[in-house]
Length: 395
Figure (cartoon, helix red, strand yellow):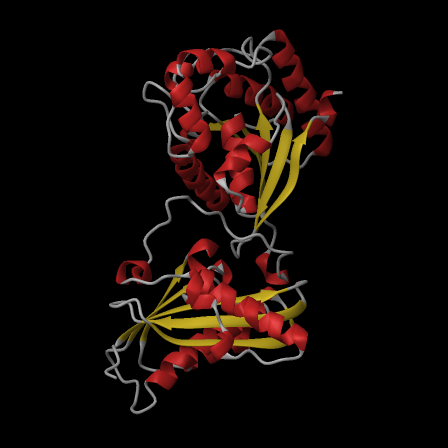
């Protein structure tokens, strides 16, 4: 068989406990044909997620070396490594320092596997790393049974039908969030924590009318102003918020302004935090939309790609916008606690993406006016939902 000079390595590692029983998996792919050239996986005993991920990287690079074993690697060999561990990708790319003593020898080992090869590193969402993830879990399952992982028993490739386009890694249609983990390694530092405050009530809120970004821009009602004041008192007591960011819509800017004034902070406006544009449904109740636009409503409830009548935004469009805003905020406020004042759909979307839940999960969450939720984002791409729909400060 004539081997290519370009390879894709997808690698992953996991720990059931962090630290706990751990294993890794890696797959080598021909980017031109999408063909799987090699698979490897191993149970490694008790270890952390990060150690397992590094060992998966080393194993994937060694698998490329084994394919080229008949001659020297030399120049002209290009390897694209794709992993859902931001820690490994950033450290191996040289953008992050390697501080943890367990990581340094593993990084050095990985760097020495293919001398002379052109190796690049790319972070990918977990959803696009299913093959390697499945291999890692197969290895951990085998270790639990006291067995060794065997390639002949693997079904990992069945989860990831390959084509050249798939091997090239197109962006997913749904902006998958970083994977959920049990915790962070000591060298990851403090997470970026987004404390998500839904705005206070407006005149439309008690009537449960669609109130998005495409119609009127209502102010807070007297009840909503009182809710904002109560939230401000609670945040001032906790003294944890370091920055305040708001949707551009009036109800959020008013809520954020009340809290920020109490905390002595400025409000930064982020357009990506605005509510969904509900098109012709703006100002209507759910029942009124059903009476006037029943077919469109049914389609909207059935598919995240369906938009409200009259040029509104689909949930898929909102998710892409919110995910891009999340990424900007997490990068800008790494290690800090940020109060994000926004709306029902953006908050539910952030929680859904953090959990890796399907789009229909949006309909299974309740968010009261002026409620507080929170998501923490770690440097390795892990996300942790810490709070949902807390209204204790309003009582």
